[in-house]
Length: 279
Ligand code: KMH
Ligand code: ZN
Image (tube, rainbow, N blue to C red; front, side, top):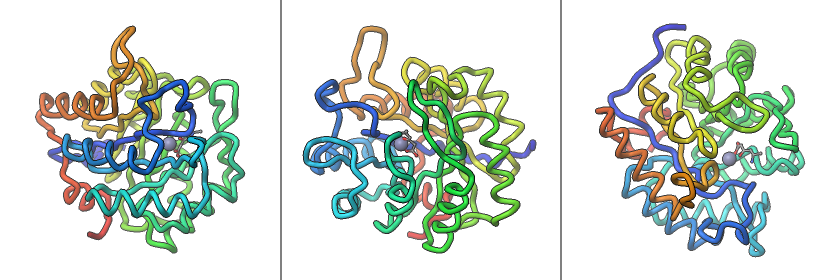
């Protein structure tokens, strides 16, 4: 494709927690309801428009327990205007049916990973039938997917998915390139550029680079007309030998670079319009 949809602004998605880091190792990681709400509010004020949520239990471990997931969704909705996007990726150890069941919490949006990938020493399992199940359930329930590509081939899977199973709820296709996972595509400008021809006209894309690839991926995405995802799910080091202080520090840097690129952060209202989410 050539005519990727562009907007005058940058959609910034905050991924504050993830499922892979332990609170004991990263004390600044938001894991309680209050911590998640506080970081969501701070980051909304700095330019985040979407929050990508993984939920932790009272022992700070990742959980897909629906009571807990609903509690966090409600608390973030109560205190912010952010688009609430639940992870359907969960943790690498989560049973696939439990990852589908998070849709019962009725988020505005949910992530939808497009293929199985090695994830360090683990395997992040996303077989075709799961992809179709999540896509179909989201269509039926009025949840907007954010497709996640960890590798170039995942974009071909997205084209095949849409050909066979129709457009997502809201009609707009937004795909996040998750780069720099050990086992997925590298977090480099060259890899991002290699993805561009596979992004079809009318789609929008964001990119996030895990670990030290955060900054080069961010700059490459901005220069290519893409959007951004940042947060402590993906990045725990702000600069060499400097741990991330909090999510706000990462969102502030992303919003600053978006401003410099003359594509300032979209508001939550603009983000809903772009993603096809009704207010
Ligand atoms: N926790 C990773 C194995 C997603 O949220 O959709 C998968 C992940 C993707 O974070
Ligand atoms: Zn995630």
